[in-house]
Length: 297
Image (cartoon, rainbow, N blue to C red):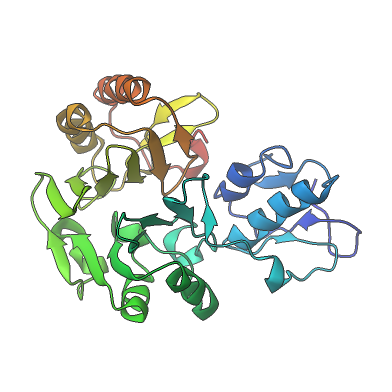
């Protein structure tokens, strides 16, 4: 159940929009009921408190609240390395203007970074990102995640990228991807247009290891597999099927890093097999009405 601010302990308020980010970060502490995140129990040790704090700082509606009712800025862990290599950071601070989407920083071998999609705008977060190294590019996967792109690009002195199919969302982009063929962004980084979720959806592949899939596919904890958000396809599920069929054989990666839905690392061969299977399944889907509640997180 949802705790009210008058009660002791951590609580989740009624503003929750069921974006799933808190359950990605603290699945043992935050669950889902009636289309909304719920607190399963109070944290029992500092490590669990830190995980719940990370979820709170990522929550786009700031619905996860500590006993004091106010988040302590000193506990903000973002940007947060996803593993001990320091190659990819999760930005946290998911924005209500990007439907609560995840965003990432990708470190390159020369020490520069690229931002993939955008967190909530904040000068303090931007400064901490810049402390990790120069950010050269802001890569937008599609129109829904473009809200803060120009602001972050200008703060970093970076190039802003988007596909022509979604150019309306970032008409002042510095680099425009076109067509459906892959394009090189930088050494080891390529863009793969995958129209379907939106007309201009793109995924970015880095070092045959990291796939920033936007909203084109994600890892579902419910099915323990790669999935598409069939019920939230704004452009065309048939086009998405064609995109996956065309692209699946070209992609090799270990990490799927989506805008919505969970992250997952598997051996590259296993991931490739699952992606081919997904392409086959999506080919059998047909259009359906938009229904956010039907997404299988």
